[in-house]
Structures are given as structure tokens and as C-alpha cells.
Image (cartoon, rainbow, N blue to C red; front, side):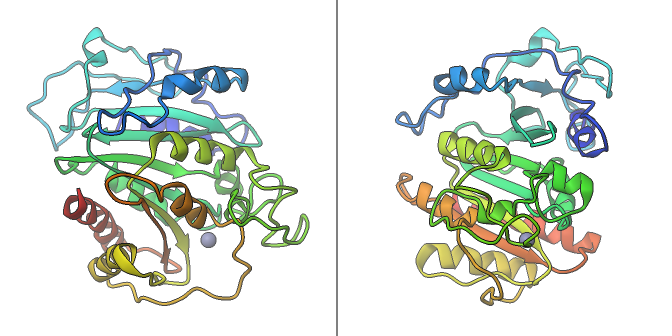
Amino acid sequence: MVHQSAIRSGYGPGPPAGTGTLTRVMSLMPASKRRPAAPEWAGNATTLRTRQVLMFIVVAAVLGAAAPAVAGPHVAAGVGEPPTIPPASVAPPDAAGAAEVVEIGTSVEGRPITVTRRGDPDGWRVLVIGVIHGDEAAGLDIVARLSERPVPAGVELYLMDSMNPDGTAADVRQNANGVDLNRNFPYNWGPIGEPGNWEYAGPSAASEPETRAVVEFITERQPDLVIWYHQDAYMIAPADGREGSIRSRYAELTALPMDSVSGGTYTGVAATWARQQLSANEPQPGVAFIVELGGTLPPADADRHADAVLTVAAENR
Ligand SMILES: [Zn+2]
């Protein structure tokens, strides 16, 4: 995909090369017709500007194997080369492969945190976060597959490679402040340790820019399903009710065991916050869970997980 170079560039050493190349600031995403009460992107534009978070949308006409007949203009943007956005690209993206990349914030070290949006703008919203712990990067392979697969009708995909790009670049669990982002979310937050502790929760709830970017994004977009990938406990924790059914289905599709996680202090956990935040979603509460991959993710397993995301989405849309 055209936008991948811009996303990946944030993971290299030094300042992110992609941020300066995407210069076109466009109107923000349309609000869903389905959720008129949801805050609109435009409503937070002032806040975002004051943080100097550049919001942008690059609509890429994708001419890959999935849609060879689409003869739209090609956006041939490499790193260091400003993308040319043809007039036709401002039309609503279609499910044939057009995608939008939005920068939702920046890391402690200034790397962009980006989300790629695909599919039906009024569809069942699925947010997939490939990495939160920087040394657990296998989820990137799943997100990469999801950026290329056809999106089922009635489904909207939001794909985030890493919400911890500094940790990903350094191959460490925490962000550049030494904070475990999966203990930093603003629900049931509690102090854990201090810098150097593997679960250091930060000085306060949502103290980290990476946490705040994701909190803001989820609060505004209100996804129906959020999945965070981790390693390497190789399981999915069970849950009750509809949430439990969806987890079980995902586990069945990927042959992951259902088991409870243990061995840590689970305050300020991202998925727990997200479930709380999305509990009033209509017509159903939002679902959010962690998928613990194994120590490695063979390509066939990455395929299975990408398929499972799309299957679960199609079954619940
Ligand atoms: Zn983890």
C-alpha cells in the first residue's frame, strides 16, 4: 500500500521521516450517520491544533491485485516525496481498497501514531492495534494483512500498527518515558512501581501522549470492537455474555486456548478502559479484548488472525 512507507518511517531511528511529507490537510472524517450523538472529529479540531497534532487524510487509490480493474489515479508517494492528491481522491473512499491515513497523535519522541481507515464509513467499526508493548511486535504482521484484504460489506476497519512507536523502534515494552502504556489508561488506574519497573504505570492516569492519543481516538470514534495484540502468553481470556461469545469465536477461528492471564498487576489496562468507555454504544456495548499471541507468529497464523478479525466483524455487523 502506498501509505505504508509513511507509517513505517515512524519506526526507524531518529525523527520520523514521514511527518513532513504528508502536507495536505483535508477536512476530517465524516461523522457516522449511525451515531449522531458521537463527538465529531471537527469538534475536537481546536484541541488537536493546540497540541500541534497535524491531522491529515491521504486517500490512496489502490491498484493492487485485489482491485485491478480500478483505474483511479495512482498516488505515488515515497518517503521524502510529497504525495500528489488528485481531485478525484476527495470522493468518499470505497471498499475496493481506498484508504485514509490519519495521524492521531505523536509519541514522547515525536513519532507519529497513525490510523488507517478502510471500508464502509457507516459500518460496524473495528479498531485493531498491532502493538502496545514495543517488544511484542507480532501483531504488525496481522495489521499488514488487514491493510490489504478486501473489507467485508458493512464493516469499517481502523488499523493502528503501533500505539507505542518509540517502544517499537527501541524493541522495549514501555514507551520512551519508561511507562507501561497498558497500565496507564484512565480507568481503574493505580500507581505501580517507578521508572525501571516493567509495569511502571506512569505518574498519573493517561500521563503519556500515546495513551491520550488512543483515548481521544476511541472516545471520538466509538468502535464496536477493539483488539489489542500482545505476546507471548498464547491465549485469550474468557468473559461473560456477548463479549465472551465474541472472544470464544475469535479463539475458535485462530485455535488459541481460552485462559486467564496472571502474573501482573492489572490496573490502568487499555482494554478494560475501552470496555468501560464503549459500554453505552448503541445498539450493543462495545467489545474490547486482548489477544495474546505466541512467541512467534508464523505467516499462516498471521493469515488466520487477519481472517478471524474479518469473520468476527462480518458476523456481528
Ligand atoms: Zn503485552
